[in-house]
Length: 137
Image (cartoon, rainbow, N blue to C red):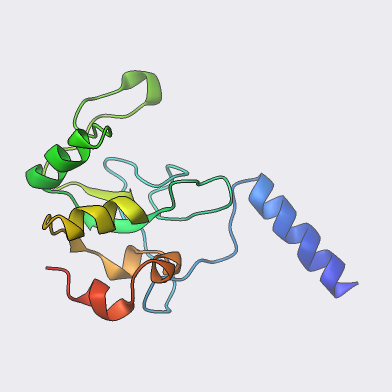
């Protein structure tokens, strides 16, 4: 009976965009990445993720001009406002929940970003070890 309740609670939480408390890469409760602009796959300010988040937007980083130009060359223009998606566009210094693979792609190209490890979801550890994440500038 307890297992059934837990399964039902999990399904309801996912359906209502609630989440079972997430952890960060340090193993502590996930902190908010940014409210202005509102970030996260669910636009709740957190780098939460779930099965519908195919880009795995779990890496809380402070974007730079170099990164914004880099990601634009990869087909993801984060600088241009998109009012139709309620997206104001990013500028250097903004914090944003990046896709795990885009963060790694930028890092491998020498485009380094400052990470907020307390706001980076533990799922990022499936892509990079904590020692590498701690080495970010």
